[in-house]
Length: 312
Image (cartoon, rainbow, N blue to C red; front, side):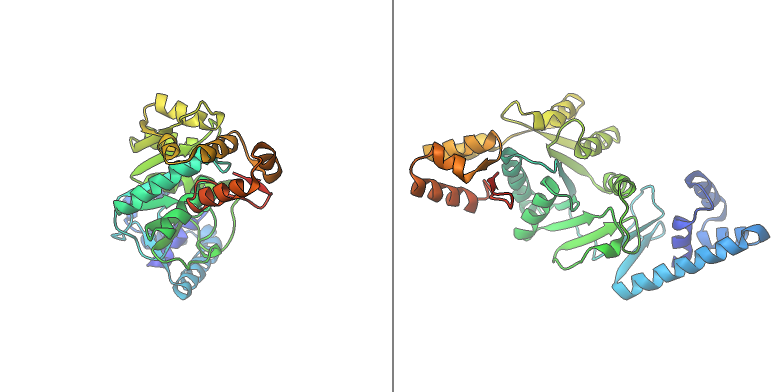
């Protein structure tokens, strides 16, 4: 029966509304296939499609990928009739941590704090593999031993599944990448399968803001961090709060209270934008103290030195 569900999802013979109507009449994809196969003009195309569906099922079986259909007890309502899952569904309230790819230091601190709370409360992180906030949240939850469902914009087989307490989910079989189209499908599935959303840091044109806005329209539980500064990188957050999201206060001021005066000066410089070591040395004459402060701040996950030679 699984190959008929895969055929039904992948088939180009019917539009989604037509599929829903035929599913209502025939009850299952196998009956729909037999009804359509009886029409001589469609037989060749349908035969090719069902053979491809069988190959997909065989590949999933070899790789330990679950094919979750509408008739599966693990299925949640969404736009897809079939979803591909590698790993086991993890128990706990699902929370998506969303944000820009070009996050600020404030975004890092807030994301780390939110992730600590998610793990403590045994929530399941929902997110993806994009750079910035998504990747930061995934790595932080993993380092703390928490659980995560990772939603892919590519085929389910395109990503290595090696992390414990992590499950991969995709609307696509195989290993293909789907630029733009893949993110649209992934984001729709993420919205449908997630209970709560937290927008950490986002501009008004960011995909993260658009996901959170769509979730708000669907009456999902949506939160947005209020920046401690009037930063352009939080404009999406400000808009979302005006549109009805619940506010979360930025934790950056609390972090500042635990820092020395020199450490605060370093952080304030980095908050204004990524900065090189040379510029920091010009600002702070005592190089040994500067290095010690940078190491302390980095060890606490408050700043990071990246491959472009800048402190963030």
